[in-house]
Image 1 (cartoon, helix red, strand yellow):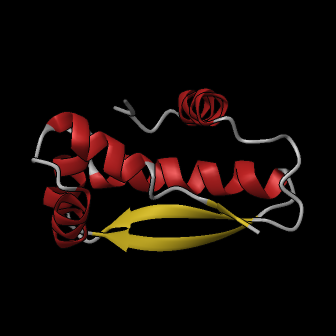
Image 2 (cartoon, one colour):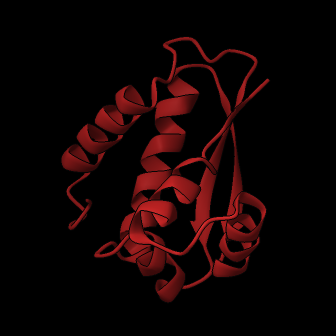
Length: 111
């Protein structure tokens, strides 16, 4: 969880996140989709304890990280409505685990 604007820590968090996600070293010719939120409430809904400013720092650092691996980036804005539609489609109930599953699958590597 990102709690402050210490860029060194943000970059370490991004590197660990990228490794956990299995992002390849070479992303040339690919696009990484990054997640933005419209407001503090939506950000906290998906990432309890994370502020909108911290999310913006994360996506900024992740964008820089992806470009260093020759990827393009695009941003999508996610809100609770997207999640609610996903719950219906997946026949799931709302839970913190499902919120995490949903939001982490919004970051995508596209060809």
